[in-house]
Length: 335
Ligand SMILES: Nc1ncnc2c1ncn2[C@@H]1O[C@H](COP(=O)(O)OP(=O)(O)O)[C@@H](O)[C@H]1O
Ligand code: SF4
Ligand SMILES: [Mg+2]
Image 1: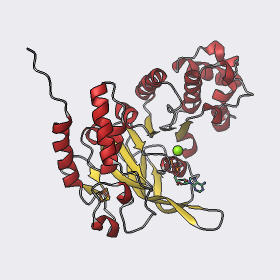
Image 2: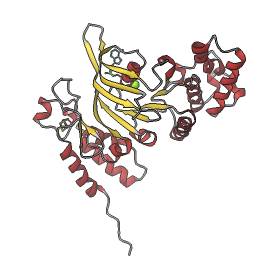
Image 3: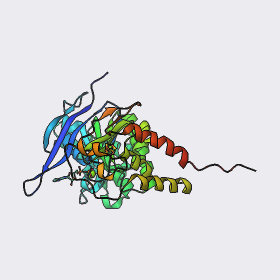
Image 4: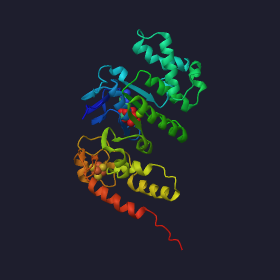
């Protein structure tokens, strides 16, 4: 087995709050990204997804644990890991032409070796490979649609030939049809450029489409992780079940069933205060018992290919199987 491109081991991140207290944003998070793999990070807002991205690029205060780049990425880490954000304006300066912004990382990393002619040629080639005409290089970000701007931000990330591209909610501001186009583009670029993605999203349905593996985060801890399809087809952690039920259904009958499931799974109470020796999800969990208050569930292997941090995952899975049968609307026999 080749060494992972990215290895995150026991990562703990504490942010310093203004009055000197610490806020633990990540608590013992471990996962790998192998070469060519796409790993999804899902969880609601505030679960620590962007903190993981920041820790990987050296911008988060790491209390404990390690982030290791391997598989050829270690030689030039600043170039090997590139980011694409939700808001393309965070990487595209509105006062600069898009050609200038796309070429900027090339100038930063290879300024001395490359002549202006070469930079221009590579920029135009990169723009075309994300579906933007080379002649558009002289235009400004405001002259493009949101989807086009995201293509340009992707071109800017890819121009220095990174090994790993972190997409932090890169599709979240786009319409569904545009999201689908960008997903296709990411898949195509993965093949042509041999890159890996760490794909961050609060939307499990998007992650399921694009990712090989998924890491579900809840308040800084991993709730469940494993092959993306296994996690979304048979979620074992109550939180993941809630996420799966939140995926909008097209079919109105299925939509009503999933709303019922969601309501059953989510108790409308304030989140519990973080306690080291408890399950973070206990105040929202319909399966919670005293044990969940008194001991922190370790991430452990299930009977399937996934890892789950829940004391009661067996009962949760059994409940899911029973409910799945009763919630499927009976077919009306044709007369
Ligand atoms: N610079 C910071 N200072 C203090 N707390 C922060 C800072 N950045 C993030 N946090 C807190 O850390 C937690 C995780 O945040 P974040 O990683 O941005 O989550 P996500 O990307 O999943 O929405 C949240 O509780 C957030 O309020
Ligand atoms: S450990 Fe307990 S509170 Fe936490 S998810 Fe499992 S059943 Fe719910
Ligand atoms: Mg975020």
